[in-house]
Structure formats: C-alpha cells, structure tokens
Image 1 (tube, rainbow, N blue to C red):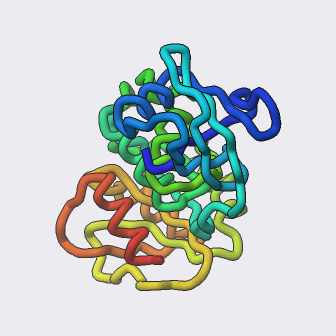
Image 2 (cartoon, rainbow, N blue to C red):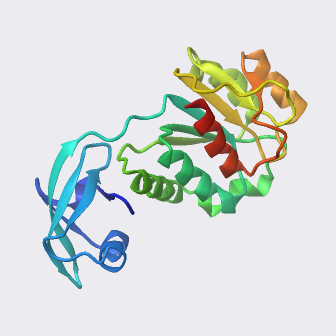
Length: 235
C-alpha cells in the first residue's frame, strides 16, 4: 500500500493511532518498518500526512500522525458500469477508485448474467474493502459512493437524466464510428456496458435521454481495461 488509510476508530488520542489486522501485517511484513520510521498516512475522507512509528510489537503498531495536505482532486466523472463478472468486480472497483472516480453505479443489462447479482462480492463490506485498496494505491482518502441498480429501464428513465444533468453524456459502445472525445476538461457521465456491449434497445434508451455512443476502437476490451482506457482518454 502506498498510503495507510486511517479511520476514526484507530485514534486513541487526537495525534496517535494504533493499528492491528491487515494494515499492521502489511506495515510489518511488506514495508518492514520499525520504530521511528515514517509512512504516508491519510484519514478517511480527510487529510494526508506522515505517520511516525512509536511502537511496534506483536500486538500492533502505534503511530504519531501529522496531517498537513489535502488528497488529490477527484475526477469530475460519474461512472455507470454494467455489473461485470464477480471475479472482475473487485479489480474494476479498485481500479476506478484509484483513478479518482467518486461516484459509481453498477447496473443491470441484457448481457449481465443473473447469477452475478447473488455474488458475495456485491456485499457492502467487500465493495468498501476494494475501494479502500484503490485509495491506498493512489494515495487518496476520499471514499467513493458506489451503488447498485438491478432494473436497467427504471434506472435509465427515472434516475439517470438527473444524475447526468449538466455533464457530457457518453456511452462506450464497440460498434459505432464516433470516436470517444479526448481531454474534455469538463464533467461527464460515462456508461460502460458488458464485454459484449449493450444491445441495440439499451443503446437506444440511453440515446433518448441525451447520451452519445462513442468508441475507442474496434477491439473488444475487458471491462477493467476499458475503464482505464476510457478514463485516461477523457481526462
């Protein structure tokens, strides 16, 4: 981890934290840190700074914290993704979070297998854990909002117009000629379908509320690759 993310319950006083569990093990075994060593730390939804280790033993690690700077700016992007395969979901959440996405919707689509919705990886605890991994990677502290929507039509017709209001509205689709715009410099709402793309009726539904179908080429990409490629192109 490039940043040790702290939470309110880690603080034993305003300037001291005690960590156990996964973060403690990572500090001890991966960082191989010891007393007086400094690590980059940040408070969830707060500032970033340095943590100086004052105690490290078998029970945990104690650090004195000094928070002095803001996290990196968020992307002005709302990301809407057709729910990917469970084994891909963790990578998608961590990747999108590390790139600065702060609002993410996981939605249904015709080509999304029904079984995906019963995966334990959709549990709130797992989604939060993957977002934390993304923040630790990117040295960020601002937790994203991640929501699920199981009814495509209801979401597109009733919620998405307001969600996407005053943003550039784009839907990634491998079978169109229009190229995805580059370095847009403004807020956007980006919809990404399953690996085989949305069906024609779904694209038509999105176009009716102002979304423009765009492509980054003829290749069919894995969802996690498409997320990174599209965000890099837009911003």
